[in-house]
Image (cartoon, rainbow, N blue to C red; front, side, top):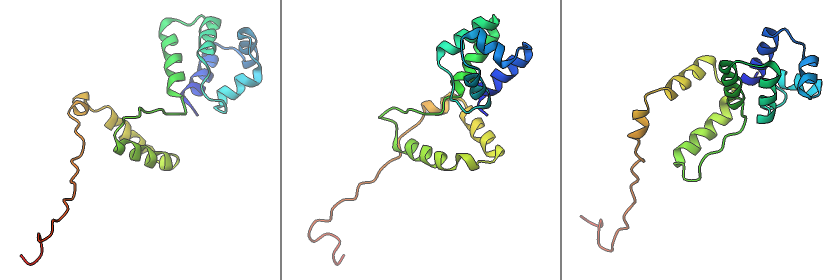
Length: 142
């Protein structure tokens, strides 16, 4: 379940409001609300989030939480064109195995991402050796 789906359900429960009533108050179909809450639909557009905030008159801390949950629930990743090749390969491996990751692996990856930013600033590209062509006479009978 996505962070937004989980947050939306918890938020609705804390406010003691039924899906149908909240959907109606916000001007959405109950079926859309249900699909969001069980994670069938991806994260909602910003307009939905803002209507939710207004409909429940959420305090500032919950406003930030709902926005963070929606952002964390994005299913697509876009990377810059000049990203190093190693990052592309890492993401390809992660994409292929993400559904089989053990919770301990997920925790480890998240911990690595939380390492100090100073490590990222000292990042260097791997050194590539370019093979030299042998000139006639080199390397033969030495």
